[in-house]
Length: 166
Image 1 (spheres, rainbow, N blue to C red):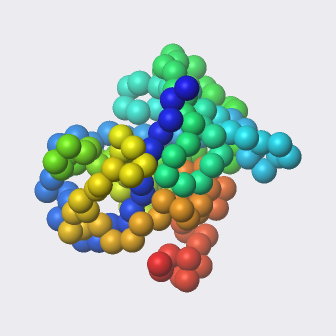
Image 2: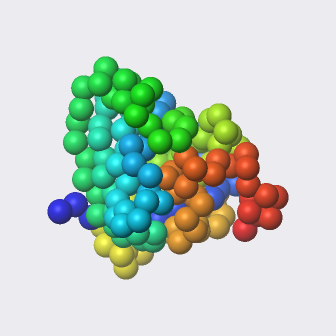
């Protein structure tokens, strides 16, 4: 079983952009409705540049959760996003920034989620010490609305001004 240990943060300013060493376009959609009684996982199709995966994640919110990911055919993925997605497809640019021993993945959302930028960093353990860069502001690991599955149902453009402020 794969276990993902990840923290999420909001960021400020543009200083991080000078540190980006890679940028990839992502499109992802969910194949199941997590609000159905008994739902324990999200199932999504994700296209990263010219590669595609199916991904299953446990519905836990927080630092650590189960995650399984397997490659699939790119044309199949495109068709699934077009015909099987529940809710809108999320699009974003993922920017990669390496600092010390960590790679920060900074998601700059597009479409109905434009204006939202979330930085994620994977850790080796839940108690790993993490030095935060200057451009990190608030941690949002425990706030469900910042998760992609939530953004596919209630996009950033529908948030109240209070929800956009931490």
